[in-house]
Image (cartoon, rainbow, N blue to C red; front, side):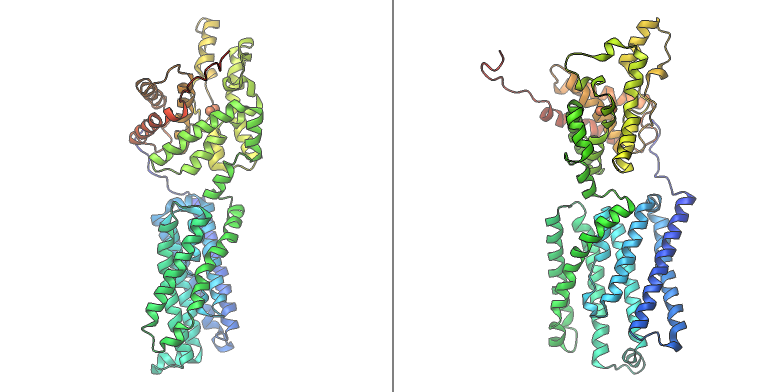
Length: 493
Ligand SMILES: [Fe+2]
Ligand SMILES: [Fe+2]
């Protein structure tokens, strides 16, 4: 096995797309700022050019800075271009929303909106915090500029005293920006591993309560405390708004950018999905095998810090290609084995095809690439020992093993590697008469050593420690999946 590979950097093409996405979103932000300046009277004819220059400098600074940061320290976000695009669109959407809702009151700026949307589509806490932070800074700069361009703001800067109205506006703006950054930092940590809708709502309520407390505490520093406190109900509204908006925005982002989110993966693993229904009715043995592999794979993914939802969905779909010829696979046969009546090379061809057929079916049914790719990777380039041995017997050993091997791709990520091991392990343990800990352990060590020796993990960054954790997880779990039952008295006739 090769030493652990470093995560590959993005290509020039991926970077070009990221730059293009950034420029388009920055242009939208400039355009929205200009409309806002126009609506609030900041961009009166004499200052129009100044407003344009300011908006351009802001957009270049914030969007350019963000792109540079992502390029340097979050390169895999650019590599997964769909995600970068979705993040930056979510951030721009939140920025535009904040700009226009502030016309009613700056307190209505939904704090943590960017963070909430990004957490729901990626679960990467750093990304959500960074994008939320940049958006807050940009919103604050635009609204501060706007306020300075109005008479009250300018007089406040010049002689230190503004009218009460603009003073209050500026104060509220700074308070809500602090809350926005605070919520943006809290939300990703709180929602990292939680996907339940009720939990999201609960988090929204906690965030609202915390925002109100923070607001009340900060209002003690303001000269007219009763006036500021009378506005606290606006903070309550803006605290709940991110939950409501993200419920509409996130499914749209998922659909538009074909994202693989937790909720999408859970939907894919739903037994009522058309392809799952077909598998259950046309190849029930394969369906049950897939469920068992999914249980192993989910636990293994958890054990090595991979995405358990992706592992489960990938396991559900890994063998859908068997739908083309379900009865040529042992788990769907009831006594008669059609391979007994055909040549081993024909058998090998039929069995080999289930990987590519599975990929085609996944694409046909709109299964995302992250799940579909496992269909062609779960057998890698492994030989089909049964047919190879049979062919050797028929031809006195004159057989090329490549004609009796899978022609797929070796796993390119840890999820595909997990499915490869769980798939073989599930089938091998099921085939054992009386599986016990020692024998299962020996079997698993053999399977893993064989895959390493055949170079099946050379294209993915799975480590020996990960493989060991996977082995131990399967040993701990197989008992629950292959348990024996007490015989019913007189049950067998
Ligand atoms: Fe398979
Ligand atoms: Fe399988």
